Amino acid sequence: MGVFMKIKKIIIILNIIFITCFNLISYAKSDKYKKYENSFYGKKLDPKWLLDRISQGGDYLCRFQYNNGRFYYTVDPFTGREITSQKGRNYSLVRHFGAILSLLQLYKLTSNDKYLNHARSAIKYALRFAKSTKNGYQIMFYPNRESSGENGFCLIALSWYYNVTKGDNIFLDKMEGIANFILSRIDSDGKLLIGKYKANAKKWSWSQVAIGLMLYDKFYLNHKSKLIQNKVNKMLSFLVKDEISDHWFPQAALLFCQEYQKNSTFFNAAKKWSITISSKMYTQSNAPSTFYIGTSFTSNSSCMVAARSEGFLDVYKLGLIFGDKNLCKRLNVTLQNSIYFLLQHQYTDEGFTSIKSDKIDIDDPNIEGGWFLSINNSNIRIDYVRHSISLIAKIIDLNKINKINLNFSN
Image: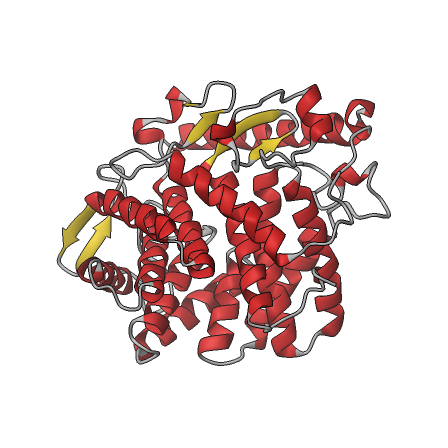
């Protein structure tokens, strides 16, 4: 078994190396893609226009949802059908919860009941996989396989639902039960003991669990749980000690600093991540064309750009808290570039025509609003859509209440 796992790890590493090399050759070196220009680059990023764009994304999610609440996972834009290989147990419940979150964010911005109703239906589908335990409830989509990500993101979604509905208690029992289950699985050192990766801190889901607990404490318990504060503090400290950081960690660090107390250690870890990642992204000065501005040297994935940019936005807000003006200035530009890049990867009547006519010749209003992955992959997947909605919704919301100014409407 040990030999098999080593071989498996080697194959995964080789695959990553191959994909990275392929992207470098295909995207950074090919004259074929250098000719493309971003038709949105430099356009005024007006909040009303951006809200219309992400509302189209929310409408896409609502259209591509089964009656039982499950979303179409990956859609072939040429047929409008779900790709067969992504049905059944290949479905990702973590990304399902992400789609729920994006619909709830849209409901908060628009008060459109359609988004709330579809989010509620999706929650009901997910809670079919809630298993009763001695400490509460555990989400277990795959039989006999625990997942910290599923439980952490479920708590995020349920806490958001409770907040935007101003206390609708339809899912309260499950929300309390999942929170109690998670708390019972965090040991005295801050290690999360859920799933096959019990001793492995190198999982993005740890930060998701921390975020879920803090939102639960904020929206439902009104910051009354010292237990949650202490356990989250130890979890995040454990991740920092092991130098583990990804696009979820900044949000966890931000929530801790906002809701409990400023922690420079968490801020510095999030800052380090943002500088490391943003330094490997194309800017106006080094991009082969405006098409590349806002993406990384090794991949032009819209999903990757949106997910990382959510982290950049959280680090930006941490920079405001800690008075790091240079960091905020740097990330201001990075975030604007990311949004320009994302806008050209959405199926709309404003779409990136030079790519559509060359690679993605589609004129189907049913898929309007969906985000496709890249110039080489025209499929739409729920996480491509959800990350883009979530990022832009956060920026619009913060601009709306004048908490920060990213100069998008200047």
